[in-house]
Picture 1 (cartoon, protein in one colour):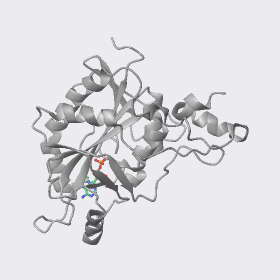
Picture 2: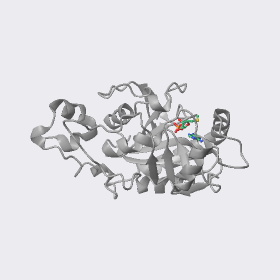
Picture 3: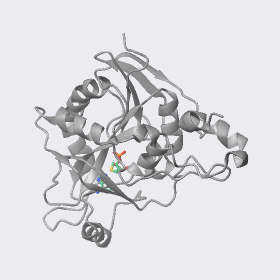
Picture 4: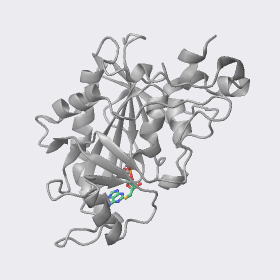
Length: 294
Ligand SMILES: CSC[C@H]1O[C@H](OP(=O)(O)O)[C@H](O)[C@@H]1O
Ligand SMILES: Nc1ncnc2[nH]cnc12
């Protein structure tokens, strides 16, 4: 029986990851959010006695393009379901020779080039500015690296994820430009997801699973969906092993986050309380209730 105050592990599955094997007491449930429709029902279960909530980012069957994912509803639904620690599993292109297909990269920085998405829970009537200087939780990153040991996965610590709008893949000129910026991997979904997780005071980390060399590599063809899917299918066992190993590590953690992810809103809200919009306060009850109670 899990303790109601112990961590709840959220897992967002990306391309190729539409269900979570190995969970017990599984129940898919619709969670409503004031921010609209999450990508799908959420899958509630336990793994080794630890509570897990899984959400397929693109919906089962991969219905949603990156631009059409309601990232705010997804994060809000996970937060109101009790999630404390959120792991994002994502397919990415590799922008470095050292990050070939099959490599798992625990990224630690992002460059956000998306432009057609709602990026904040806050806004007119309740303005907040959280820090994104350290966008991922190092405790979650450490746990992922430990979990990869013994799985035969090449896991790299650190890297910059370039988030593009898509849905088209990059041109060669763009791919070379992102390399010149120092980016290591490229994908279409981790922004604004990571920003919203920070606003919701969740510990967040991404496991970026390299599926291709995008289109910059002179010895490799430009990325195609077929290639991404075939590498992902080859990696599925490793991704499942990673989840099986990482959940007990995260689930047995006690105490607050040393990095302070759970207090990200402490000094973020700039709107004076008398000017707070009542409807916004209500809408933000799950995401920011901790700092909005008066
Ligand atoms: C199927 S290739 C492009 C697609 O894959 C990645 O998705 P996710 O991060 O959810 O694994 C990429 O960001 C694109 O959405
Ligand atoms: N090369 C690439 N560009 C953007 N998203 C991706 N997802 C997997 N490979 C990708």
